Each structure stands twice: as structure tokens, then as C-alpha cells.
Length: 341
Image (cartoon, one colour):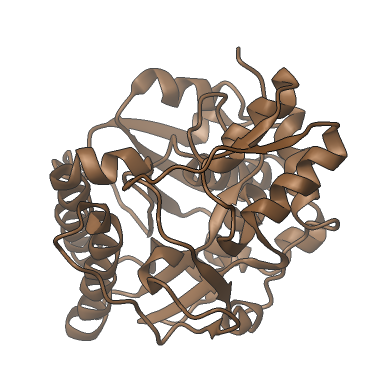
């Protein structure tokens, strides 16, 4: 049974009629965001008779099957084993594409920079060619706030901006791959009429985070679960907005159905904006932990960032985030099913 419990407010920004009886290809389907999109569609299949069919491209069939076990209408989902770099044949009709396959571990951006770039570039080209061939009704590429580089403190970051990245820094394989993939999407929209839209997502977490997730929110959650102090390896000055997995899913589907082709949308919850140190303190205060500092220099860590995303464009589509208590609401959602099992 699907544990996702979206409210009417969360779902009303999506034009569900466009997705009724349609087939949607999702890459990165077992990832945090891809699986949240699947659960959202599953809820509408179960409660509203959407009858959307989902083709989930997965690298690991076992992980895919675990997602199916959580669904109310698993028969609507077809697992396809493969990668975006070596896309398997998909002879069936496909009406929409959500392309979320990507490296997500910061260590991989350095240690596996070639693979990070190949997944971004080769994978995106393969998906865009497929979308062109199938004449899809919508294509959403999941990009990242990292394409903005290092905006100045106090600056509201809009979608017409992008950072500058040195290729000499291997850590930049990720944002460079994202920017290049965005450029491919815009080019296919202009040259071939593929209805590509781009979602630049802020850091997203909540329901579905695995116990061993190595990102900051996963570490904080383990500290909560194990009742251990939070130890920060930086001064925690980086500041950004965050986003719940549920809100990310509804934003992506809103962009898919009503976003403009060739347009970029920032996706974030402005009410969650805080520094890592502030977030650590909020979490520690709520869950009875302490915060310690063991500051280290490490090339895997980004420099201090101030990422305050302007979200006027996505709000213009009728979407709005739903975390009532900001960042702590997202932690509450995450901790509901966060376990080492």
C-alpha cells in the first residue's frame, strides 16, 4: 500500500487530464525523487482512476521491486532494466518523459568524474532522441541548483543565471554536466520542437531517504535515530532553501503538464532557507542532541554557498510548497519511515 498521503492542496496545481491514460517514462526511478513521482502517480491511479502507465528505468531490479511493493496499483508500473547511457529498446508508446537519472554522491563527482559526465551527456542525448522519435507531449529534465555556482550573499538567484566552473576541478563534473544537459534540452526544444522543460531543484529530502544516504540530511537523520551528537566538518555557513520529496514530485508533475517548452524553473521552499549550522541547531534542539565542530579541508566539500532561489516562475504555474513548519516539517516526514532495515 502506498504510504504517500498527498492533500488536495498539494495535487491541485497538476493538470491531471493531460496524464490520464498516458504512459510516462521515468529515469532515475529508484532514486529519492523518481520514486516519489511514482508514488504520486500511484496515488492518483488508485484514488482518481488516472490510469497512467509508468515505465521505470532501473539499474537494479531488486530496488525497483521494493518500490513496487509499496504501491497500491503496482500493475501500472513496468520495470525496465538498463541505463540511460545504454538505453534499452522501448518499442511501446511513450507520451511523457521525466529524466532524473544522475550521479548524486559528492564523492563520485571526484572519484568517478568521467562516469558522472557520461551519465549526464550521453544519457540526456539518448533520452532527447527518444523523446523526438516518440513525439512526446512533455519532457522534464531534473537539473540542480549547483548550476548557479557561488552567487553572492543576499542575492536572489533567478533562472537566467548560471555559474562559471573550471574543468580543472573534478568536483565540477556534476554542475558542468548539468549545464551541458540543460543546453541540450533547450537546443532540442528550439531545433526539433521537443517540449523540454527544466526543473532546477534545490536540495531535496524527506520520505524515502535511505538510512545510508551520505548527504547532510541523511547524516542528521542517523544522528537523530542513534541519539548521537551532530558533528559538522565545516563551519556550516552554506545557506540554501530545501524541499520535501513530496513537494518535489508535485512540482515536477506541474512543470511536466503546464510548464513552457524551453523554460527553466527553480524549485525550492523559500520558508526553509537557513545555513547548515542553523539547520543543525534546529534539529538538535528539536530532538535533544548537541552540535560539535571538527572543521576539515576537503576537496569533496563545496565552498561556502548562499543559494536563495527565486521561485516566482514555478509559483506562476500554481504550485506551492506545503511544509508548514519549514525545515523541521521535512525532518518529521523523513523520520516517519527512516530506519536501518
